[in-house]
Image (cartoon, rainbow, N blue to C red):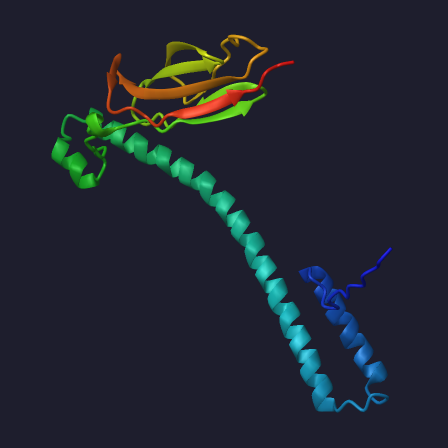
Length: 212
């Protein structure tokens, strides 16, 4: 048996361990200073470098902890502030003296954008989850998709379609013949107010292996 010896770095990788390593060096320098003929200036320089590093490490960790705490506090306060602003808009809308121009001046009119449905197309992603094909897509402003599937097993084929209103859907339809491998090809169109709109999606496929 051939053995290979690998030398590890003597510098501790973790911040906590390195700080402990530095404290040990500071404690041992006075012990070996004279034996090793180390000057006072050399020892002072080493000690200062280690202490400055540790002080900045501690400062960084304090700021990081404060940042996490502040972030959590902000999320709570921000959510409350959003409720207040929404309440203000509701009051303004119900105020007979408030005109659309006033709402616009407050910046409280919902932003509107135009989506050309003719150029929109779903992007399908299919994975095998617990032995079942799972289709995912981004729903966007549409009601869902009209999903088309072609199943190929051996020399035979079968097609079906399904309206999907969730952005994740599992195709739990029974296998045509569990003893044969089966490939399913999927494509879709967006559906808006009961009508198919936009362009054909990408074709996503997945193969289900034969069950022996």
